[in-house]
Image (cartoon, rainbow over all chains, first blue to last red; front, side, top):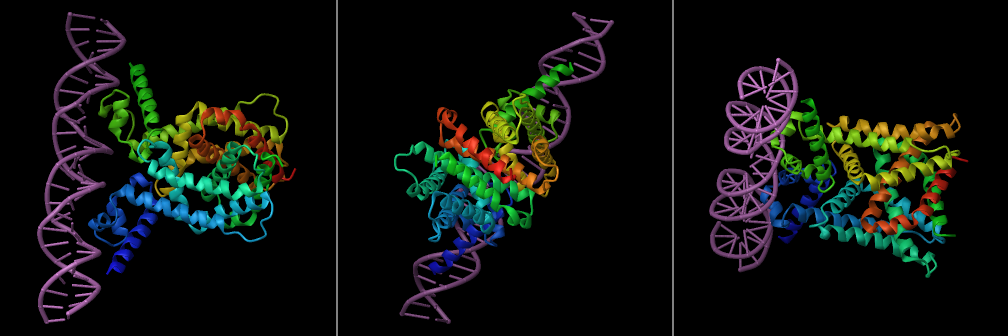
Length: 198
Length: 198
DNA sequence: GTCAATTTTGACTAAACGGTCAAAATGTGA
DNA sequence: TCACATTTTGACCGTTTAGTCAAAATTGAC
């Protein structure tokens, strides 16, 4: 019985994610979501308080998934540069494999910046995400390093990943991207390494 | 007489730009714009066809301003690296001096990606912008270089600038940014230079 | 100061939207 | 099969919004 409710909740989230990757969050209506999920409008309000609630839920889960990908790397990561390269690669994979979540995170970040008065609930996942990056690289850094520098590194990594891949997404097709993105990633990694004074 | 109309149009654009930098484009209402401009609602429809029209107009002008900044550099730019550094610095200055337009361009880019079916009118300025970057760096490149690689460079530059500065904008205050962003920019420039095989 | 052309206005309409809730549908245990 | 708990539904309500338009206000020429 509760199984049914869970399935329905899942369907709602899936539908919402789909719609949010096709239209700007603020332009999406509740009925578009429930229609896509092939459910009645009231059902959404059985599972979520309001539209914002479902957005926050989805952003939170998307960050979870992204972090999961960031954390999964094999033993070949030995140096700082290896870790940075892994992080960028993981971001790239995320933008391809989880395109909808990538676009949602991108949009959400913008909303946080704009309507920050009300939505610090939405900001929390992004802080969590930046913190995760910092923690992943910190083992490869001198413990005496300026924390601000690490924060900047995380911003650079996140910013580059989101900004670059988003530009690339529209301006190039998949094959073009796959083919030869590696050298650029490598170059960026090198520059970050230099930035950290190694 | 037409002077008055021009002034009014200018006031509308200024107000709209302000509002768009505080709220997501799709969440902004026409009345919010006209109220901010201290004008009647109908006045907006005297000067623009609809809400989309004013957005497209503003994006177009913002790209003009950004391109203007990208083009203005002194004679000290001799190498590719100098040009890349100038471009990043110009983006950064634009994000600070023209914060509202920067945020608008950021939002607009996202809209293009999402609702691309209808809004290729909105996409045109961004293509113009990428093309401008390509043209600015091309004098410093071998004429035999793969055009795709140049396009990728432009995406990297644009993506990094928008993505990084936008993350930095929320996560750090101005002093922190100003103080020590230079080495990261320099490192990134170096990596791009390496990417282009020099 | 008058008049006509231009610009601005805000009340108005029709449509759309978020959110509610009593009723219907569905699943469960006896 | 029936009674009961849970879940789903979509018509409904109040509010908000884009867009209109006849009237008012402003301007400049004479």
